[in-house]
Structures are given as C-alpha cells and as structure tokens.
Length: 172
Image 1: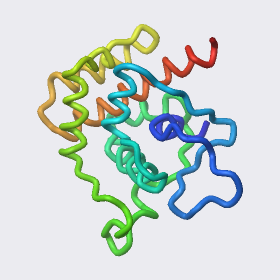
Image 2: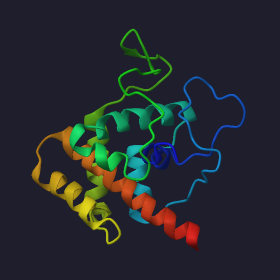
Image 3: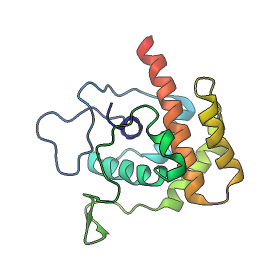
C-alpha cells in the first residue's frame, strides 16, 4: 500500500471517482478496521472523529511530525512508496492553513495522546511482532523531553499497534 502508515492513521475507505483536492490517497483495496480498547483511544487522540477533509489534514500534519530523519525507516517499514511531499502542502495557501481547516496544535495533540497513554494506552509501547522497532519508540517516549520527538514516537507506536491488530482482524 502506498504509505501504509498514513493510510492506517486515516483508516478510511478510498474515494470512488475523482477525489476532492484535499484527499489523501488511499488504495482502492484498503478496508478500514474497527479498532478497540487502547488502540481506538490512542487513534482518536491522534485523528479525532471529523469531516474527511479535516482527517486528511490531521494525517498530513502527523506524518510531517513522524517523518523526522531518525524515524523515516520506521515510517516506510510497511511500504516505502510515498505519494506526498510534506514540504509542498496542498493544505497551505501562502504559508497559512486553509480557512476551512481546523488549526493543528501539536502540543494539544501531544497532551491528548499522553492522556490516552497514561489511561491504559502505555501498552502501545510493547509489541512481540515488531519488538525491536517499538523498543526504539518506547525509548524515545520515556527518555526524550522534546514534545515533537515524543509525539513522533507515539504516532509510530500507534501505527505499529494498528498494523498488528489489522493483521489479526484480517486473518480471522
């Protein structure tokens, strides 16, 4: 799948026909999964229920945080094809977010995510299937004081947990 990490965060079906200009590419064969428990709470903290345009903008903003050089190998772990350029945003007009989109407040997103982690979501930093990768995310989450680095680690730990649960659901 084309940038599977972003597709997992969106967890939306593909658009049929000509997509709106704000749309992030989602493969036609992608089937959204209903997540439960802590994964659902963590994903909701990252990509809250919102109109599709807002969800696409939020996924774009999250991926721009996660795509720091140290984490890029983890972003492309499930698929190395990227269909977007985080440096050339279709969501910006003259370096300002489009008026129809909600502002992206990284600290508010971090606080919501951190609250979900503290309320049972800490298990997102454990994995048997991707133990080595998730250990890197956990180390960054617990030892780094930088909000952006911690949020990047949390985003990717959530993506990995979503992929693990998705595989389990699809194999059932």
